[in-house]
Length: 217
Image (cartoon, rainbow, N blue to C red; front, side):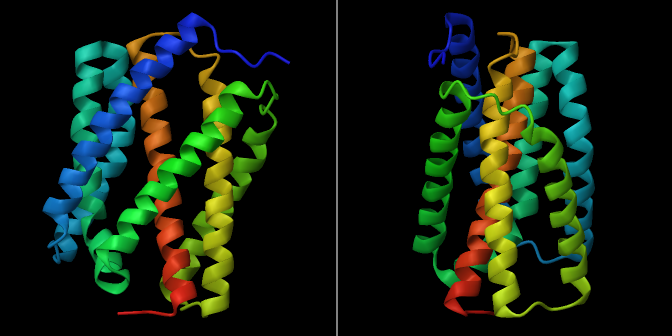
């Protein structure tokens, strides 16, 4: 099995590491700024901008390097604003120390799964189809949860399932990145994908900690 990454892919991952670092900083700033948002209208607007940005960033990246990186920066800041009230909820319920450790834990999982996906030499291409179905399942459960409150046990199982799915997404997306060209367009798209995986894993981890602790507010 080939357990090395050639120089061109090393260059791509260097670009991704740089863009991810910038994205996390901007997202953190957005989260801090958005922590006090309580208006439902504002949250809906941010949600629309966040979803729209997921389509705008790839188009901008295709247009030019500067446009792609700029769009990614704006989108990650908006995503931070959108996540602000949710993260603030967990800060109030669990404490900022726990939330901070959850961020570090998510980063650790991403690094470990990324190493498996990029360096193990295993072909993970077959994961794509199953992860798509799993993601649809999580979305359906999330919609149901809006209308039907889940018990503590169900929330624990749901959050564990979500973490498992996005841990596998880390592996799958790092595996796919090995075959991506060493360009800023590819780096922007890979960064966007990994950022979404990170945020989703983090939210499921926080939900799991909240469910296990039994603390609600």
